Image 1 (cartoon, rainbow, N blue to C red):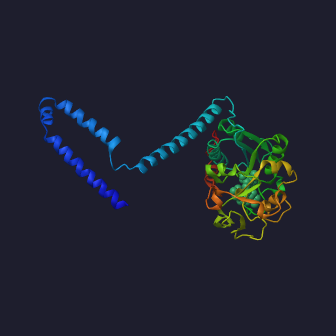
Image 2: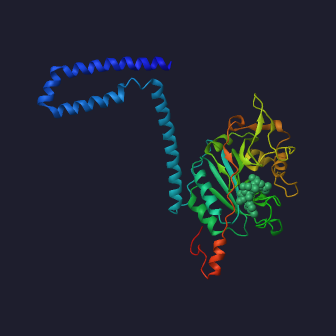
Image 3: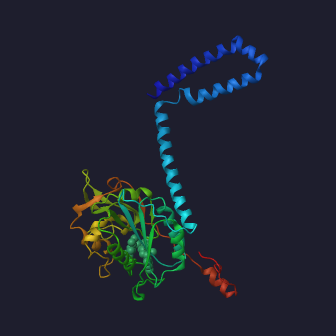
Length: 359
Ligand code: UGA
Ligand code: MN
């Protein structure tokens, strides 16, 4: 096939060379060369232009089709980023968030617990910029704080994504101390429950939607949300960089049923997956109002216990992300930021470096 195409190209090149030689030897060429060299240059330029744009035989049909496909794709990417840009611009100009969501497709309700720490703003900005590019999206941000903070309030106001800002303080006795191992207490529990209560009290039963628990430190691809949108009950999909392995994933049979999980850590859990690895249909969340995150569960059973309220077995799970063959979400974590330099400055009688700045 390749050889054939090459030989075709060579043949047509020979034919073209002969044609060019004939023109070069012709009377017209000599006339133009002597009398109208400017016109000759313009003509040569025009011929080149036409040749390379329209009749270059090396541009096969499939190339043209490919180019068209690329064109449509890049047009979509461009439009999407323009919409994201416009949403953010309108919000930044103080006109409030413009609700561009519609009922043409199910809404995604993403629940994000968040708490004050040096990387908080960076994490939330990252999420804001991803979510700006997701259509029909409602971001429910729940601060682990006694009162909403200015940092989160202002960030959400300027973000451009439709949002609801809530707060739920983790009781001090359940809060991780900086030196505690992170498995000592579950995180984000009060905050996710607060968001679930808000959804149950505020979202109309007639609304089509999907609920997803989007922690503030993970990394989400745009395809993930398009995939989740069709969740009928509970969907599952692979999560990278979690549970001490590179990839935790459901195992899917050739006919598309979830038949197991590859988790290494506590594989006997009913649903051994991370919070980022499942999504729930809104109707199910509304119907099963007892489904909440519990503090009473064994370490690592947060997700399993919650999903247990919603469905009665693994056979009801839906495999997303191309039958769990794609990675669309990463359980990234920011490294704990060392600020020992601030103590050194303090000892020298210098002010902290962030005075007057919001970081
Ligand atoms: C893993 C899972 O990915 C979490 O979904 C699960 O809540 C957690 O384990 C657990 O076992 O509790 P990990 O990355 O270790 O996650 O947890 P974090 O990302 O530190 O916390 C999860 C969410 O809770 C984040 O959105 C975080 O901002 C929030 N959080 C954390 C609080 O609201 N308050 C805190 O004191 C700590
Ligand atoms: Mn995390």
